[in-house]
Picture 1 (cartoon, helix red, strand yellow):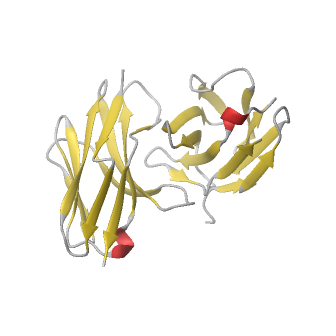
Picture 2 (cartoon, chains in turn red, green; picture 1 turned 45 degrees about the vertical axis):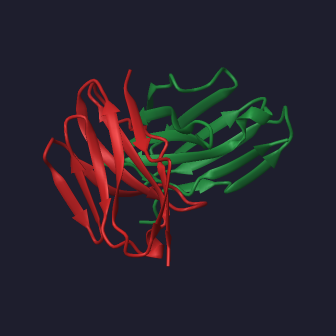
Picture 3 (tube, one colour; picture 1 turned 45 degrees about the horizontal axis):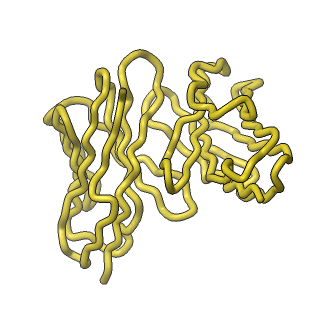
Length: 111
Length: 111
């Protein structure tokens, strides 16, 4: 069964304190791993797609990496506005384009 | 483009009533997804369409739930009769084959 597990469930950081979020997955053939950001009361907002092991993508203070079993979202020198829930999702092989989501990591960055 | 548009944003109803949620996808996208989000179960895929045709409805909880996509610019998710355990945020998303773009969600409360 395709499965996505994110850790930690919640993370509290001081402004400027770098850290990483983890997304481990088991999937019947990976056709993409996706990271989303979700603010309270809003829909998930797309951040990155990674397709193969070794691939990296960056956007401002965020960098996503991918291995054969997991992905990391590295947050460098975070600011309070980075506080949100970060969701990881996988697209399994087998046709079509559905995404299977993990439970998310709630990040709080305090000044 | 205005993005994925969902209505209503909030719905409060009583057990046994019919609920209809609506979605207008991004123009040109040929995939449409309905997800449900709760604290306990996270984001769950209910059903998705490709070119207005339902592809996978295995996530629909039971016969009380139904979804239609009569044309490329409109979809509905109907719950009849509604139950308190249906209380959740329902998201519609659309895709052109890559990442999914989500609407702001419809928060349903069934009393």
